[in-house]
Length: 453
Image (cartoon, rainbow, N blue to C red; front, side, top):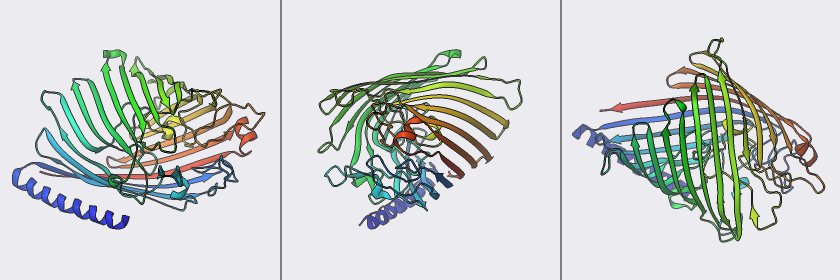
């Protein structure tokens, strides 16, 4: 049935494209075909997406896949943007993501299995899915005010609070939403209501259940040479709460950053989370604090950055107050929490130092060190769900060493080489398994764009 649905929608999109080309020729509007092909070779040793350790035993004591997968990941975007004039445009893009060689499958990523709230969140595979399909109007009613309606990616700033999560093979937060925006010079305020989709390879998302509904607000105010401040707000409500507690939570916070103030750069974010989950009150918070300096007179212009990423945990998970922070609608990509991709912004203390180098105009190199700890040892390692065994109170998850090289071979071609090594800490050694882990990526990315006037 799902294959028939995919074929049907592909046929509809093909006919729609032909009609738009004809209108474009007749009326002189513009049409742009564009897309992206991304191929990635990836190896893991001592870890996979569901488990840590050579034995691949998850937090429930079940063996999940293998700990030494060698993967080939492929993701393709393709579609068009049709501009009727300078104010109105339509966009439609499909994407397809595939994985070969991994020992897990979509059954390992079923949530609320066997219940009416069952859905899939597969991090690697989605077959012929909508990436975006929206109608956009600029200068609606007044100059600077715009509206976007339909399937869309919503991201801002460093994508930590709102971001689609593009590093994984399957796209993270994709919204079916209506979004309004007001922009004036370098200032803007955006607000929207929408629902986020599942990541199920076998279901076309427009006719399948959504996971969350939410309201968001993000703004940007330039402070001349002193950087920018970006206040934000989110309301998050799960749409599957027949068998799990209903989440009705609110996030409020701001980001303050400057990329270059007399060679100094900084980035500070604070978020407070309030509301209810079931009959429990939520009171949690998180922050990011980074500061760096660029040595412009040195070869390769080194930028040294030190910082801490923090998310509160809960010292008493069984009481009536939830103090564990979980992200609103942000990315968990490795650029934030280490390239091993085994951490999330929850019950986490990440003391880090990074060195950025620019040896050539089109080559960027990054070295990073992370010291990962739990905020509260009574709470979980949230990415996997592991907990301290009875009598243990370990907090140190481990140390991670990262290397990343990005090379822009051409304006449309990018190459990335990434290596991460994780040295297990006391928590992992005494509660999970006594082994270290590593992760290697080799990625090729090609973008294309063809405009028809």
